[in-house]
Length: 338
Image 1: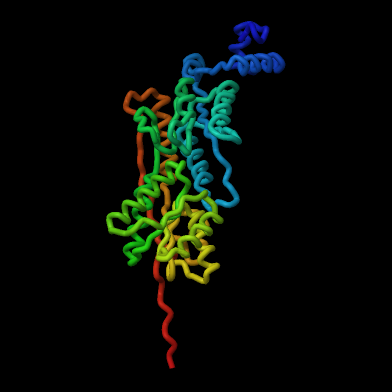
Image 2: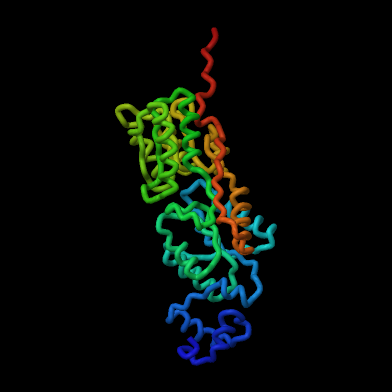
């Protein structure tokens, strides 16, 4: 790299580790050579030469206007609070595209900044981010388990299967036998797990599982799926949804048909978004223990940074079923008196 940039080896080292010692134009030439040659810094090796920066990086996807849940916004807040309490600082990483763009953003951040560790979110099968961080020798933990059964990866997750299983059992206890499911597309591992919870609860009660839809996570998709299920020859009387966003789409469809959530069709969501408590009737949903997720993730990273010889931390937390009016029959209207 020094030869390609036309500088000394010490200048390259300074540009990567102590950029304030290098003139801006010289550093630009060195970084161009780094990019051209595909150099990937090893943060662990750098940490042996330098003090810990106490910086933890996290890439956050912005909330979409058609999604009701602010789960990741809440997660960012508690993650930052947990990091500060443990003596770390959280730095946000920006990447617009898919995994390849995210990995490039990670590499750029490592090249230009001394990052101690990363926290990942939204894990999936054959996650290239995991392979990249390992190849660079960078500690990391994830909000979301390894879907490939990788026991060497530290993670904290919430049991989506247990959540939808509890929601399905709840509406079944209200007397519902035609319980449909509106979930996410098949490529979503998290969506498939939530679907499995609904399937298990239905099969335990000998209920049919023909009423199911796999859609994008949007209000409109939930609305359209509801109309299809209610137009079936033997329609659903209850709908268990993979998110509050989909469940609110269900409520919109019921309003269009003159039906009442709870009284006519039971509905459950997932994530306990702020909107869930504001709509009427309130939306029965599943609340994730985000405070505990943030605390456990920072603890996992701290253990990795300290070289804890124990097995990587694996924490599976259970969501809480929050029952509101959307899944309950509600009071019957009293007959008029003479």
